[in-house]
Each structure stands twice: as C-alpha cells, then as structure tokens.
Amino acid sequence: MQAFKRFASSVPSQFRSVIYSSHSLEDVTSVLSVHRYTPKESLENSVVVRTLAFPINPSDVNQLQGVYPSKPEKTLDYGTKDPAAIAGNEGVFEVLSVPSNENSLKAGDWVIPLYANQGTWSDHRVFKNASDLIKVNGLDLHTAATIGVNGVTAYQLVHDYIKWTPGGNEWLIQNAGTSGVSKIVTQVAKAAGINTLSVIRDRDNFDQVAKKLENQLGATKVISESQNNDKLFGKQVLPTILGSNARVRLALNSVGGKSSAAIARKLEKDALMLTYGGMSKQPVTLPTSLHIFKGLTSKGFWVTENCRREPNKKLDAVNALVKLYKEGKLISPKDEIVTTDVNANGSDQDLLEAVKKGISASGKQLVVFKW
View 1: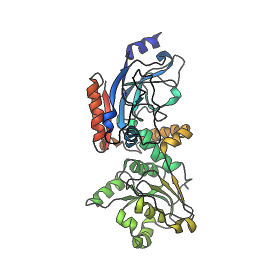
View 2 (view 1 turned 45 degrees about the vertical axis):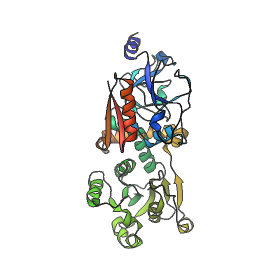
View 3 (view 1 turned 45 degrees about the horizontal axis):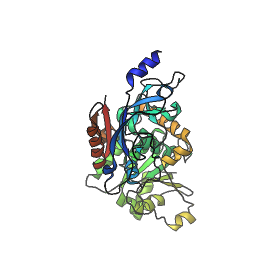
View 4 (view 1 turned 180 degrees about the vertical axis):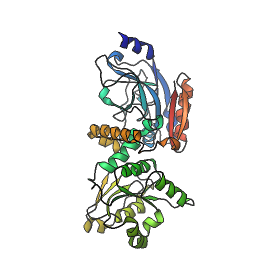
C-alpha cells in the first residue's frame, strides 16, 4: 500500500511530449509540437519515470528529417488526429514508481533507455519492463544523459573488435581527435593500457589543443591532418613516436576522404579499420595495396544496430563506463555541453522553444528539466 501511495502522489494524470507526425528536410522544427495525453499503459504494473535531461543529437534531427535508417513507429496511442511519434532517443530519467514485484529498480534510481526510439523528449515516460532500462546511479547529469550513445560507441569501438595484449606496445589511431566520441575513446584506451595516436585538423592553436588532449585526457600522441597525410612524416617521424615493436592494430574513422586512407596506411598487417561517421561527407577510399598486401579489413560501426542485435553488450558497456567514471578514469563532458533549463511546471511553449533552440544551435545541446 505504501508503494501505491508513493506512486499516486508522484505521477501526474497527464504526460506531455514533443511529438511529430510528418517530416521536413528544410525545417525540422516545423513538424514539432508539444502534446498532452493520458498514458494508456497500466501504471501500477509498469516502471514510471520522469525526465531529468535529454540531449539533442544529429540522429534525432535526421529522424525528424525522415532520412535516418532507424525510426520510431508512429501511433494513435497518444490521442492525436494523425499517427505520431515522440521525438528523441537518449536521455536520463528518475524512477518514480515500480511494480510491487520489481526488485531490480526502486524509486529514485537514475536510468537510461536500453533501446533507441523510446521517445525521450517528454516530461514523463512509461516502460513496461525494468529490463528496458539501465541504472546509471552516481553519475552527473551531463554524463548520464549522454553515456548511452557517445559513451557506448567509444567503449565498443575500443573493446569489442580487438583482443589487446596486456603490456604490449599496441596502438589505435583515430581521426577527429577532438570529437566527443574520440575524447572518450582516448580515455577508455588509456584506462586499458592502449596507446592512442589522435589526428586533429590543422589550426592556429594546434599545440594548445594537442597538449590538452595529451595532458588532460591521456592521448599518447596528437598529430595534425597535414602530418597524417605526409608520407615522409609517416616513414621518418612516426616510427620514433610509436617506439620499438609497435603494433598499430585498430583505426577509428569518423571523417572519411583522405583522412581515412591516411590512418589506414599506418595500420599493421591484417589490421582493422572501423568507420562510424563521415564528417567530411567524402567517401572512404582505400588504396588497393592495403587490401592485397596488408590484408586490411574495413567495417562499418553503428551503435543503434549493435544494441538491437546484442542489447546485453550495451548493458555491459554502460556498467563498465559507470565504473570508470566513478574511479575517476573518465572526465565528465559537462564543460563541452550547452544546457537549456526548462521549468518542469512551465508552459508547453517554453518546452517547445527550448527544443527548437537546441536544434538550431551548434555543439552538443542538453535540455534539462528543473523539477
């Protein structure tokens, strides 16, 4: 009876969510609206959560454009005139109520969704099964809200494809070394004793950025794209950086174009390159010799599909990341994320404007509910 009292006093009779029924390539904000509805699920037999914060990711925008390969099913369950879906794939929630027979979660736990397409741009959500949620207690808000995409991507890129040799002079090379994923890759690799060669674009403050990546995040060495593309640098300077008996076993590509070919050239025989992004919007073009004479394997990586196929691996990755954060081996991304606060009891227009602002702004955006 006590559990029901807590449930009854915590959950509103109506939820509100940012929804869409159509798509737009020109202006994705034009298809969004805030909708209030009474959830159809049995709340007493479900996990009821309230949203603490949700990021706005490029994939969220691509879904609103209608071009992303993974998308939620539109439904009439929210009482809309046309079938609609709740926007958003990532976020962190606080558990308000659990079924009386549920022991893995309790009120007050912080959780994130296990799967994509759950509709996170909402003030409250209902999950039928506790197994559809992952606990992230002990993290700060910025880390918890973003760990499910950037964090899991970085962890799986490092750990799920290569069996690293402890104590060996082994390396991974990655381009876009200042990106959110790359920074987590750097820290995850350092924690595992893996050396990182990070490539960043040429810039006026190159030395300052490189030192920050090396001294604060633990990159073993940072080089520029011009150095990455310089064959003489690769033959004469790079061996002195890598050291004796070095093995460059993995390349992580999120740029494409010349950059991807250049990092692939630095791999050892029978090594692997994983492509998980294409910032340059140029194709991945690899020299024929790398395939014939060095046995290069080139694969694509998509964290959403990986989770759909093997959800337990996402669970394992999140649990490992939470441990690393608590041990101080990973740094919170809070200083790199722009937050927009929304009064949880404020107007629908305030919520909609916060979302529109986040979509239009540059950099990583996080909408935070103030309860």
